[in-house]
Length: 96
Image (cartoon, rainbow, N blue to C red):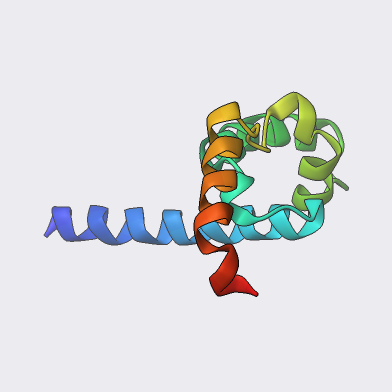
């Protein structure tokens, strides 16, 4: 019985985290693939500490303000740019 509760709690937690990451992606005008779920999760601790000092804070605006120091947006690596260019070369005729 306990494993079922843990299973459902994990899914609920992931659903809430996914919703937060979607809101952050919309606020930052970035695709959801560029948002680091792990870093959004880690930044909740820092938000909680800031919330203790200022109870008027809201989560999403705070995350947007401190997104660079929290590392919420993944960097575009050289290999990602190469893969995107290769993919565009392959599929360019189908996209037009």
